[in-house]
Image (cartoon, rainbow, N blue to C red; front, side, top):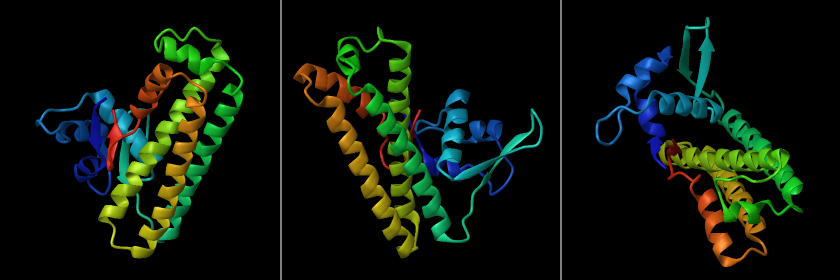
Length: 203
């Protein structure tokens, strides 16, 4: 799965009034080629969810993005904690609903068939989405820690990053518990494919 650099996206944006089409035209991959419009659109949604930008909708067609600024580092840490809590709760809820079902066995046999009940499938997708959100939050935190000069902020974010890592490890343990080795490989591959490199987003 391809990735896009958070830093690259932000460098191709002015402080205010950035339109999706302009970002699509100027933000290029490592080969100097444009990303798909859909990839830029999804990446902007992720940047908004991660607190880097805010969307301003003046009309149905006039939508632009402004970079976010936090006057107090505690405001950003509070935002990060809210995102963490929301997605950790989704993971716990989804795992609880899936705990006594054979969904992971079914998925390991055929990842594409989804021959499972609609509700179980929805819970599994919620689990994947929350897992992805946390991995990309961890990626964003690593970027902020790399670029920030605020030591207090960096120390607080390191604590957040440790909690995310612990949650992801616990989730991994639960989904592979009592699985056969071949099932574990397939399921772990499914979740590992959601983990971006530090400072990147999955496309």
